[in-house]
Image 1 (cartoon, helix red, strand yellow):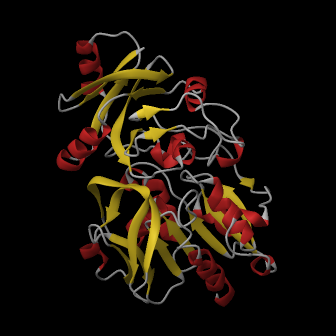
Image 2 (cartoon, one colour):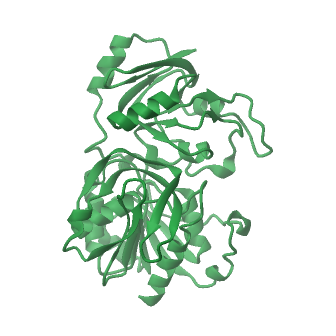
Image 3 (cartoon, rainbow, N blue to C red):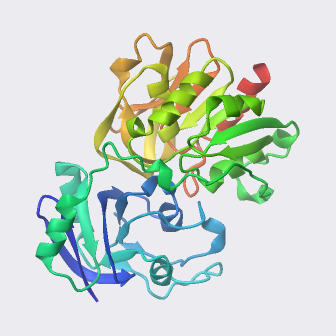
Length: 373
């Protein structure tokens, strides 16, 4: 099955199709992770995007039910250099090809992914159409031109939970490198806004002794306070934070009333709520190997990242927030905290599954913040 990937600037890649025989449109980005393709596919933060893997061989350990970060994949399309069609791993229950086919997601392989990555790095992330079926190129161009950009789109509405729920899935102690038995002795009630939350975030919150109630992205601040939470968590999620204006308004009402911890999109939403501004990065940060400097100690953390927007450092003036972490690749903000209120957030995914565990201390910081409050 032949397939094509057409970018909005006219650049065309031709290769072999896999997964579903269909057409998908999305913002084309690249991910630098060597492993973790299943977690990437099921990360809701990728809603609206076609993901390119820079590592050349993908699918070799198959698919299994334990490594899902949500109930289904959220990428619009998938681009790899070479697909493994016969995986070998004792945990594998199926192939990547069959998994994408089951969820109606098209893929393309046997293209020069290094050339594609360099093109995106040079020109910036752009919209593209991935077609793994027999269609005319001119029709694809028309369809791509009519499709809306990522900027200004509320993609959170497509990935948030439909109704409030309590996370009650137990987490085996051997899931993590450190023993969290002592951490789980005391219980704090945390209300987690689901902007596209990953399962491993919920696993970690509960592992650190927190009872977690997950609420929809549009849950009013008044309703959250009625639950009498010890803290509020703002999750990761897809797209432009300025488009999720209802979330910004709710978080603004919660500031000063309860400890708040935000990550990724939650970090950006908190920034907007506190009075800062956000902007779109040229090609974003996507991978599990991004170096971040913790300014308080000078330590370097290797982090998992997935975002296309960032908080403007100049806009933090007068907000009461100070920068705590900086990305060493491009000096963008990776973390902030309020000088007086129990509020902090980070741009990375500290739960990092798969990936490094350098930032797990942030969950402990949140717990101590609730204890002190």
